[in-house]
Image 1: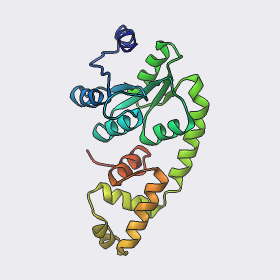
Image 2 (image 1 turned 90 degrees about the horizontal axis):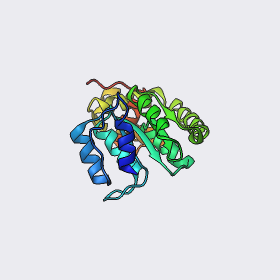
Image 3 (image 1 turned 180 degrees about the vertical axis):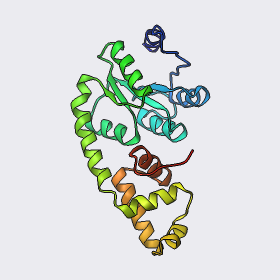
Image 4 (image 1 turned 120 degrees about the horizontal axis):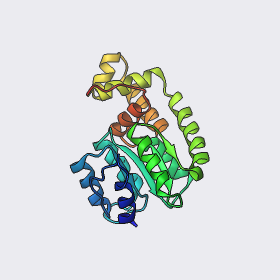
Length: 201
């Protein structure tokens, strides 16, 4: 099926297929070596990391400008929520024709979101939930995330803001919880994608 999809995409004049992979390890290395505008990813993968969600997350950590469109037979609210949080731009069910996947790739290449019909209702509900979480980030939390992005440690941030280190620690933990981030790097990445902060370069 992979070759059939690849051939169908290559038939489009404006799409250049620069590589494909059959497992999670090759997917990561191929993305890093070819640096495509858009990656099409399944949610179930062979290899050392079977979760396409985690592979997508790692790809976006290393290639933040990458557009990702998920092409999968699996659909759930929890998965769509996670995909939305990490910045995946598109989801297309494998029950859809490849022309729909082509539309998703086009949208992702422009930084736009795209969901096939069976995912659209779930995606809208998920996006609303995530947007509400983003809106709960306080001005102080946003300020602290910006300073983290600028390379400051928690003690340095505390000194700059004239607050205690525990206050900074609590703010970071709160922001991580709101954005579903597991660490400081992920927190910054999600804040950038939510347009809460700006990172130079």
